[in-house]
Amino acid sequence: MTDIENSASEQAFPEIHEPRLWQDRGWTAKVIRNDDGEGWAVEMYKGGNEEPALVGPWTMGRNKVDPKPLDVSAFLTLVKTASEVIRRHEQQRYAQLHKQISIDVGPDAVNVELVITPDEFEPYGTLTAYDQSREIIAETKVSPTFRLTRESASAWAGGGYGRL
Image (cartoon, rainbow, N blue to C red):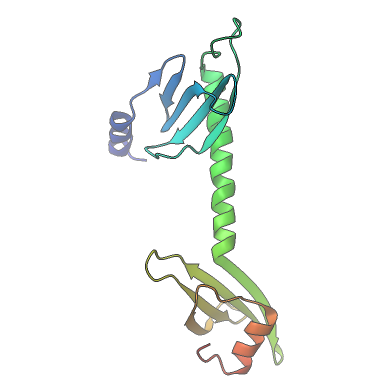
């Protein structure tokens, strides 16, 4: 991030260090009443997102009524945990939208890749065949529900890489 971006980010999300609300480094932690039962919960938000990246139980204070106040150590642990949750979600989403399989076409190995573009109005898939040096052999647009299997990839290659 540049100094200008950092400055803009800090203005949009000024540092707040309160017992039930911490905002720092582009993250916000809010301690709230636990709707599912007794006690307290903490919500972690990244940037200006409206949906929390992480919601979890929060420790009671010594009086067993009020929540334990947020502190820098707890906040940094929450940031790390929420970042890992986001990373796992991104990896899962990537895996759902990108499939790859290797098939034999004659004496050559061909890698076939399916990439789904989740457009809100017209989602579609792109099926691409690559040779060993990652040169594109063929590419075609497919339905976003297309299932990439060895059989479907072999049928596409066997049909001369035409439209499916």
